[in-house]
Length: 88
Image (tube, rainbow, N blue to C red; front, side, top):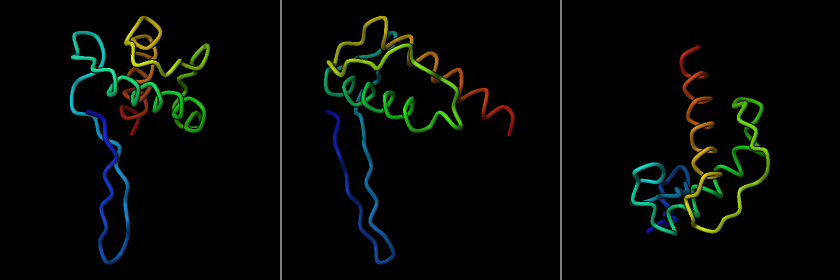
């Protein structure tokens, strides 16, 4: 189950978004985990495109279904992250 975890220390409070099962080709693709990945891919596409050039042709519908558009977005994001990491 996708969940939000808040961790507090004396110095800071951090929030983590966690999934419990794999999402993508051959993944378990539980609805709530897929929804979180779709939401995060949309956010990365909108706000992180300075670092990651992975434009989606259109925003993913956050419906929890790991269909062709979601799979293509996952592949594009992974390919672009790997390119960025390879240049470091």
